[in-house]
Length: 401
Image (cartoon, rainbow, N blue to C red; front, side, top):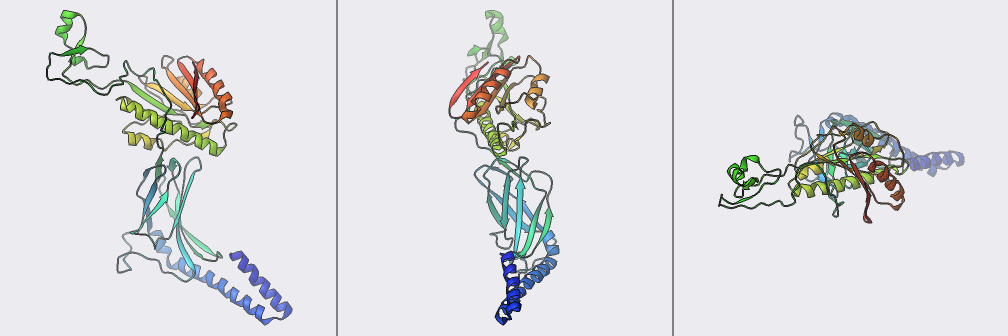
């Protein structure tokens, strides 16, 4: 709009002087006056609000949110700024045709963006909501408060620095139909029943199950019968089985575009969360890790938040898997790949104890990845202690050890 008006102004002046038309010269003069007004108005407001802009504070209230929901932020002024209105709310002085907007731009490590622009003077109780459509850990180095004219001639922006940590964690939602998984290691017993029998009769016994507390064994009965029994009336301890779910975020640029890679990692995270919730329901100790990140445990909500961090990266990136304990079952969710280059997954498998069993699922959605996925299953299935199979989302499962 601004360029168009400037062009009309120049043409009006040129045509007016060439043809000696007073009307055209007046039109050019009026448009020039508008342009000058925009310039001086933007400059004046920028000088007036210079200090106030740096006292403006925007805090994201809902730092942790599930994909598909809304995030909320609170816009306020530093307390050192005095009140200027009857209600105690700070407001910016305005001039006609001049706009003031706060620009918040959040970005993940794999270039996903949330761009939210609002007028700080027109918020209900200083709060504003924005849509969170994609998973990720969102950062920003600074926000901006912009002062500009409505015609788009001139703009002045104040940079408002932010800390270096994530400002928003958009957690994935667990897929409704998770990959069927049977973990083969990580403890002496994997109990599917989460309930146990209680009784007030302490002479009732049941056979000992690996993982029971040895202090509850009836040693006198063992001396007579030669078998191990525990008192039925005492609570059965939780199982000792431990599961570590690793999300491999490295993507093959020959198979995935940047957007396809991000969607592929989303698929891994959604299934990782569903598997984690399933095994936590079985009273297993579940932790989650990802390429380049630490291993994290906790409540279901904490595991979901941890899965906001994985970001798609090149298969040649230098990030590594964190060292893992020896007494856990390891499940790796990864994407098919075409190259034979050494990746974080390959380096992890070489460093691990060969007696430690690892399950690897190559997860994908498109038919074109059938061949690379089958090749990956064949190659990785030949490694000692590794069980690999491929899963085509919504099309069933095939595998090869």
